[in-house]
Image 1 (cartoon, helix red, strand yellow):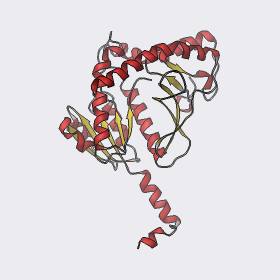
Image 2 (cartoon, one colour; image 1 turned 180 degrees about the vertical axis):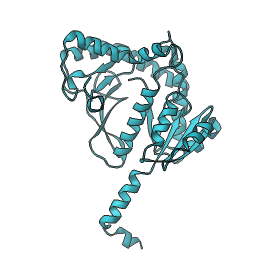
Image 3 (cartoon, helix red, strand yellow; image 1 turned 135 degrees about the horizontal axis):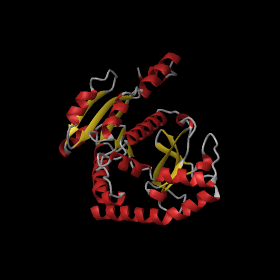
Image 4 (cartoon, one colour; image 1 turned 30 degrees about the horizontal axis):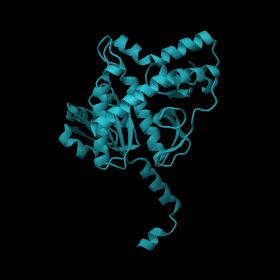
Amino acid sequence: MLSALARPASAALRRSFSTSAQNNAKVAVLGASGGIGQPLSLLLKNSPLVSRLTLYDIAHTPGVAADLSHIETRATVKGYLGPEQLPDCLKGCDVVVIPAGVPRKPGMTRDDLFNTNATIVATLTAACAQHCPEAMICIIANPGLDPARVSVPVIGGHAGKTIIPLVSQCTPKVDFPQDQLTTLIGRIQEAGTEVVKAKAGAGSATLSMAYAGARFVFSLVDAMNGKEGVVECSFVKSQETDCPYFSTPLLLGKKGIEKNLGIGKISPFEEKMIAEAIPELKASIKKGEEFVKSMK
C-alpha cells in the first residue's frame, strides 16, 4: 500500500489533493467579539479557503459563533471564552489573526494605549507559541483610480509620520503636484484619527481594519498553499534601515516570509520622509523591546 501511494499520482488525484489542501485552513481569531474581530470573523467565515474557524475573546464569543454558524459556508465555527479556553481554541491552527485590544477614543494617542494593548498581544502570542507553535501569526496594527486595481506600498511603522506611502511606486503609475501629494500623504498618515473623530467616541477604525486583516490572512493562506508571487506589506524584523523592525513589501510563501523585497527605488521626497520617521520609529521599537524584557 505504501509503495502504491509513493507512485506518481494521476492528474485527477493531484487535482483532488490540491483542491482539498487549498480549502482546509484552520484559522483562529483572537479578539473575535470586538469591533474589528466580528466583521473580520464574518469575512473569514465567508471564504472557501477556511475549513475551521475558532473564535476567542473574554466576552460574547459563543454568541458571535452561534450567529456566524447560520451562514451557509463550509467552515465550522466555535466560540471560546476566557483564558482557560484559549488553549482549545488554538490547538491545530494553521493561522492565528489577532485584532485584540482596546479601541482609541477621541483625544487619545496610540501611545496612550500601548501598555494595555501590548500586554494583550504579548499574552496571546505566548499562548500561540505554547499551543500552536507551527501556526502563522498575523497581528493587526495601524498602517484615487479604481481602488481595487491600485497598489501602493506603505512602509515604515504604524503611526503618524512613520506611515510612509510610496506613491512613486504606485501601480498603475500616478503623478501629483507636490501640494496635492503632501495633502494626500498627510491624510493617509492620519486616516485612523480621522475615523476616531468621525465616530465621535463610538469607536475607532474597525471595519476597514477587519477587511485589511482578512485580506492579509487570505494572501497568507494562498501563499502557504503554493500560490506564487503573493506580496503584502508587513511590519517585521528588518535590516532595510537603521530600525530593527520596519514595514516593507514581503514575498509570502509556504513557510511565511519567503523574501523581504525591501524599499526599492524611491523619490527624494520619500527618502526625506523615511529619514524623518526613523527617530520616532526607533523610540517606539525601543519602548516595545523594553516592555517585552519587563515581562520576562
